Length: 73
Image 1 (cartoon, rainbow, N blue to C red):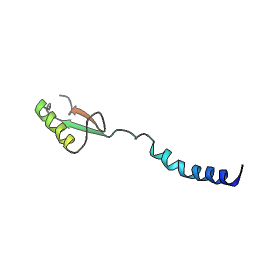
Image 2: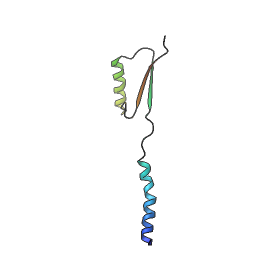
Image 3: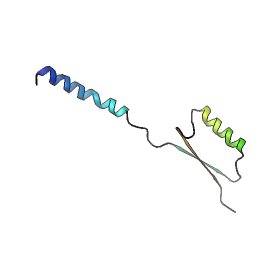
Image 4: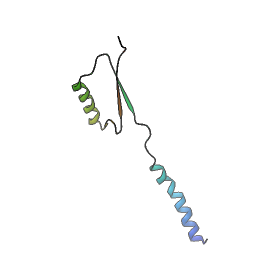
């Protein structure tokens, strides 16, 4: 192997890892928990989701919403 080939291979090897690291998949999807004592109406649920969309959070893509009622009676 001549010197030019060695230097090119060494340079390529040093520059490749940052590109490989950028290609890693995202981690876990953040989860929002909604705890209510009364059932949320469809209108309230939709306005909550619209507020999330206004801030670039799309349920199922980059955020997960988990709704639950308070303690059962």
